[in-house]
Picture 1 (cartoon, helix red, strand yellow):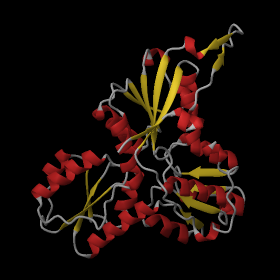
Picture 2 (cartoon, rainbow, N blue to C red; picture 1 turned 45 degrees about the vertical axis):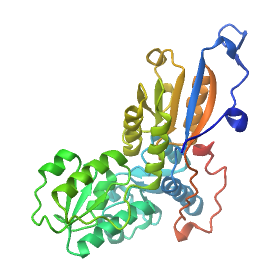
Picture 3 (cartoon, helix red, strand yellow; picture 1 turned 30 degrees about the horizontal axis):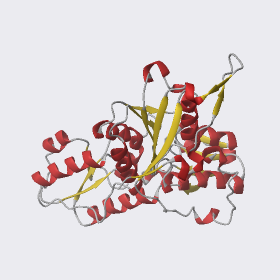
Length: 360
């Protein structure tokens, strides 16, 4: 169920009364601007897994000092990466890039998860590592290993090349997992033992698209075993559901997120399918093409699970500068999930100031 909360019920949503015209030095009341309703989706932005991963890097920096190395992007968001770099994090693609003199410093594995070969490599190099893999991704790893342990060939529904897919496939011996991306792949799939299969999915997929692929696989392979629990994470499902309900009637739907963020790109697709006239993926307000946006009266706004709230606020303020913006909170559920950081870091205090670079 979609609940709409108006600005009067949430003071932080209220628009400014006046806007200073910097070019001519005169006051311009917002009555002179075209009206705009912004449907701000909730939940949006950081999920518990992303929040935990960023906290791990921040706490490691507080505990061990700079540099703290991070293998690959901690999450798929350039703003977050640059914010952590400013604090002293160093991002590397592979562990052999860590200088010998810094091998006592922590290296953090990203929220997307890594193949088993990565911690094994870290151990062989005597590196101290902190695993920031999202617990829900780790759950998929365990489900895939359970299928394998029971003698089933694992079918992984996901996107080739995505770090999460690479990490999940890397939990099992080579040849133990087959990747299926589309219904067409499901149609063409020819397993050696059609009666002994088990599937898992990437956590950040479109719920509707994934359901179609699973349905086709189950039609072709009636003995296909499901995972013990749904692989698509709660945050992906929740963000897609509220976008789906908020999209009808929107002239434009903006998703804040990175172009390499799977869950963010899926939200763009969901908005279009649900009735938004147009949907775009934006990393920062500076990317907005105002000529292309043109005259709109209803804007949908959400953010992928790795997009910080400060950018959502930045987007809202950019529209308030040009429109008489009335913000409504379109909310379906409230998320209360919280994932604990690694034991080594739990005694370190995390303050609001530590996370202000992403939370505002």
